Image (cartoon, rainbow, N blue to C red; front, top):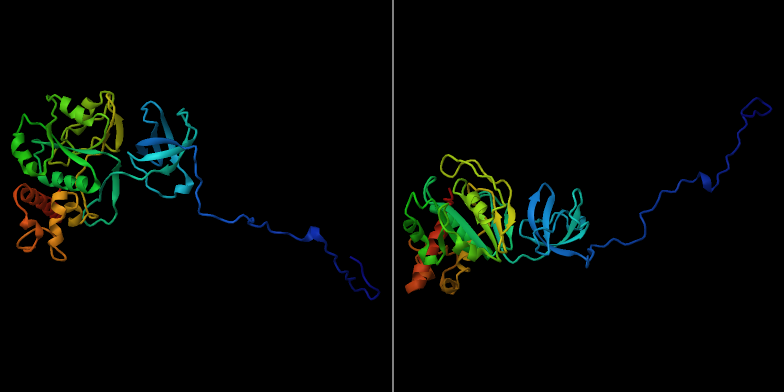
Length: 339
């Protein structure tokens, strides 16, 4: 530092140039857009498993052509469930440690959905695009309860699935007495216990996607192992009334030897239907839907004394019998007796 003649510090002005100026990088000039890539090269596939943010996808309907995929960023939190038809890009070799991307979820034709209970506002889609719902019920050990079946029927009808009752353990109790509860709904009933011939059921399931549900311990996994010999789904002994050890913990689509898929779902303890209204149930029956047009506002279709002017009571013959059977479903929907 220099000094002037009086001993003071010599102040020199600093000269600045462009090298002294720090320019903060800009954010770019490309405008942001919400448009998603078209992914015209995406390969179509079906989701067959879900596990901690990874989806198993079978490409082109070929069971052996399976890849593991993640959800593409542009899908955000779009739910993807077993049965969904999706578009996949990226590494489609299926080699260990390879990872593809799901970039598109096609519109669903049917949905099986439920909530944890009737007070839970969160609706969970269990299975997508299944044509049938096979409700597996044990006739004894544990004893059957109509509540779960009625609620499962409601979920099937409102979700666009065709329900089927599969009864196990008919060597311990009479099947006809239980099946009679649902006769007026025209629900197919099949005996599917360990000693039963499954030819009729196999014919129904072939070339279709079918979801299976049931309480733990009713023999659902045993049935799956018979339908799909290579499935090796875990089976176990349970205790209590429908409250035993869950032998399946994740939904899984399994290929049938003759074509088609069965989707084994975890054993359930309750079937919440908080998202379903009585009119949704009635709408599933073409011969009943027109009758409720004459109902007063707010009618729950439960009949007298709750709804003394319900239009269902004006029906006759088979339609009236069906209406009364549907009222049983609506009663189950109202009281949450699904255990």
